[in-house]
Length: 392
Image (cartoon, rainbow, N blue to C red; front, side):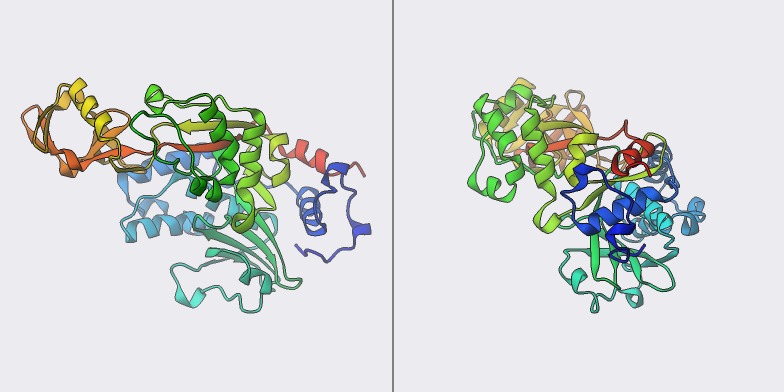
C-alpha cells in the first residue's frame, strides 16, 4: 500500500457520498476494495470456542500452530499466562482483524513490541506517529518497511494505525466485531431515591452520551425499577450521536474495520457507520463495574427483604438465597450476588452450614453504565465494494 503515491486521476471514481472524506481516506478505501477479498483466519465461532477453552484450561500447549498462523493471538495467550491475567474475547478479534489487514496489504513481518525490548517501535522518524495516542503492541510490515500496520492497546487510543513512513500518513482504524459496543462509561451516582442523574463532569468527559442520558432523565428513569433488565428506549438521533462522537479527539478513527456475514474483512468510514449498522442504545442499571455501597438505606432494605440477620456490622444470610458470580473472563467463582445491584466477594465470605456470613462494609454496589451498539451482521464485502467504487 502506498498512500498518497497515486494521483487522483488514477483512482477509481468514488461515489458522491465519499466526497466528505479526505484524499488519503479515499485512497485507502479505493485500494482496499479494488484488491482481492481476504477472509479472517479464525471465524467468530472459532474465536469464541478458543476463548472458552483457554478460560477453562489455561494451557498453551495445544496452540503452538498459532505462533505462525496468528502470532498476535499466540502472544496474547502467552502474556495472559505469564502475567496470570484473564483475557477478553474481543482481544482475539482485534488480533484476527490485524492479521487480515496485514494479509490484505502483504505485510508478513510480525514483531511483538510488548515482549521484546529490542523490538520497541521506533517512531522518531515518523512525525505523524508521535502525534498519535497509541500504545503499540504488535506491528506488521514488509522488507522495505514503507508501510507498517500498528496494532495498539489501551483505552485512550484507537485499535490500529496503518502508517506510510514514506509519506508520513497514518490512517486510524477502530476494530469492531459484527455486533459490538462503543465505549461504556459509568454513569454518575444516583441518590437514595434511585432516579437517574447526570453531572457537568460526566457531560464534559462523555459529551457523546449527553442526549441519551437526558432523554432518560426526562422520562424520570428510576434505576431501582429496572434492576435485572436493561433500558433500550432511546431515540435514533441520540444513539447516532453517541456513535459518531465516540471516535473523535484522542480516539479519532478514520475507519471501522469488521468482518462481513461470510467472514471477509471489510472497512467503512466511521462517518458511514449509521448507514451500514443497526444502531442500538443500552443503559445497564447494574453495569459491569462496582464500588463501595453509596446508598446504604437501599442496601439495608434489600437485606431485610432477603431475610438477612444483621448484628452490628455482621450480615448472616442463607446461601441458597444468593447467586454465584463468576469472574469476568474466567471460570472461577468471584462472589455472591444478593441482587443484581449488590454483591460480596467470595474471599470476604465465611460459611457456617447453609449460612453465609460477611461484614456489611464488604458489600459492593454495581454502577450503572451506558453505551451505543453497532450491529454489522448483515453487511457483505461486495455490497460495500459496489457502494464505494463506481463501475469501471
